Each structure stands twice: as structure tokens, then as C-alpha cells.
Amino acid sequence: MTKNKVFLSIVVFVGVFSLLYGYQDLIGTEEINMVDQALINGFDFQMSFLVGLLSGLLVLVLTYNKEKIDPNILTEEFIRTKFSVSDLEKFEMLDEETKQGVYDYYQDHFDLDDVADCLSYIEKKQPKTNKFVKFGLLGVICCALILVLSPVHSDYVSAKEQYNEILRQQEEAYNQIITEQYLYYEGLPTIEILPGNNLKAGDVQKYVDEFIRTQPQFLLDNCRLIKFCEPQNFDAIAVADGMDIDNRGFGTYVYASSSDFSITLQMDADKDYDQKGTVSHELTHIFDFAHANYYTYYGISDSYEWQRLHEMAPGSLGEYGRDDTAEFFADAGEMYINYPDELKEANMDIYNFMNNLYQMY
Image (cartoon, rainbow, N blue to C red; front, top):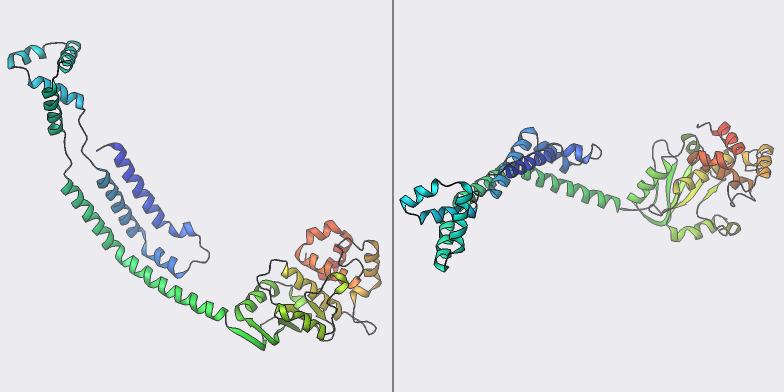
């Protein structure tokens, strides 16, 4: 048995043991599901050590073969069998170089029968691995592995079935259709699913968790109602609410209302754009409405100080607010909440104004 085979079996043992016992570290501690937990519980130190040991033994037996004798040594041994006793005694008295010359001479003069006899001799003298013993040991080790792993496998299958059932129920709950109803969440404005709109409960929950809960509480406190609709129904709803959906060529995707301090949003939970920033923008409009006076429904954005800041650099925050102080204010609020460093670079005076107002940083 060579050292390489023993070393390989040790490597397999260490690798299997480390993989099983360190499974929790391998997958990380975040979001460990019940299937992972079943494996973590099943492969404790003792189980991991035993499986690693059996795996190492399996590789050792699988790669085991008796070491072959050098054919040249057996050929020389065959040649010596051709000597008489007296010739053998004389041969043994020769030095190694002379002996090698004798071997070479005999090999050079082998006829076909000698070659066949020599090959037959070498075949008989070569040690042979007992295949019955080898395969028997492999069978025993495999049976031991099956026996040892059976409880872990049973727990794994059971956990996987339960987990799949939970996923099925979650998917069913996610896809449940909700329509024309109010939803109430602690600390958030009332959520209204507008009539004629059918939304997945999971999409609504995802939108609320990712884009609404993440807003500053002082902005949410000013908002009384958040309305959701399907994208294909948005334009009709906006027009019915008196909105200009062309909006100076920019179009309207969401809007805020000063009459009931609400914002109306299209339910595109998976749409690839900055929806959190969009909600921040509309909530900033509501904040603006909340600070209005008796003469205008805008408040801060209609103030002299803000109009002066707008006049100094109307396009510093982008084209959308260039010609509209209210949109300029909403853009500033959106950037201050989500991209404060970019706002500093764009317009430090605006950043300082918003920081005095919102005081988030």
C-alpha cells in the first residue's frame, strides 16, 4: 500500500468531515431554512467524524491493490531457475556487473519458448489482490454508510417535504388576489386597493415592505392614504382625478393629492427603476402640502427662500424640476433621503436647506 493512497484517504476523511461538520459555516447564518437545519442537526461532530472515516476507508479499499514486483527482477529470477546447483553457486560469487552481463546474455538468446515461459513465470509470481475480499470490504463499508446516513436522510426528506409545503402555502398566499379594500399597517398610512383593480397580495406586501416602510416616519405621518392600482388602469384613474398625464412632456407615473393628502401608485413591484425614490418624491409633495397656508396648497416650495434657491440653479437637480418649484422641492427631498452625497455635489445650498428641514443627517 503506497503512501499516496493513504494520504488520499486522509484527505477524503478531512474533506468530508469538514464539509459536513462545517455545513452551517459554509452556508452562513442568514436565512437557515428547516432543510438546512435538519442537516446541521444530523451531522453533529460524532456523525460527521464517522461518515468522514467511512468515506476515507471506502477510498482506501477502492484504490487498494497489491504492489507489483518489477518484471526485470522476476526475469532475472526466472533465468536463475535455469542454472544447475553448481552453476548457481558459481553465479552467486560473481560481482554485480558480471551478473548483469550474464542476465543480458541469456535474455538476448531467449527463443520463443523461453519468452513464453518467462512471461508465464512473471504472471504467476506477481502478487494478486483478492477481489472477493476487496469487494466484500467495499460492500460492508457501503452498507455501514447507508445505515449511518439513514436517520439523517429520513430527517432531511421529512424536512424537505414540510419546507416545500410551506413554500406552496406562501406562494398561494402571495398569489391571492385582493381588490377594492383597505389595508392597515402599524405606523403607515392606510393602503387602499382602488375599485376595479386586482392585485396579488404578495406584490402589495413586497411594495409596502421595500418602498414604503423604508421611508422616514415624519414623511409617512403627513400622508393619510396610499392608493394602489394596476398599471393598465392608472391613466384613467389619473385623468378622473384631474391629473395632466402629459405633465409637460415628462408623463405621469404617480401623483400626490393635496385634497386628501394621498398618493396614488401603480403596482409594479418588480419594475426595474427607483420606486423607493419615487415614493420619497411623492411623500415630499405631501410634506409640502402639509405646510401650506391659506393662500396656496403649496407650502415650503412656494416660499421666498425656496424660490430664490430655485432661481439660482433651476437645473441643478435635473430637468424635471427646472421650471416648477414644487417638483424641484420634491426632487430635492427624494435626493436628500436616498442620495445625500449626490445632492451635496449637485447643490450644497439645497442640501443645507433640506438638512435644516428634515434633519436626517
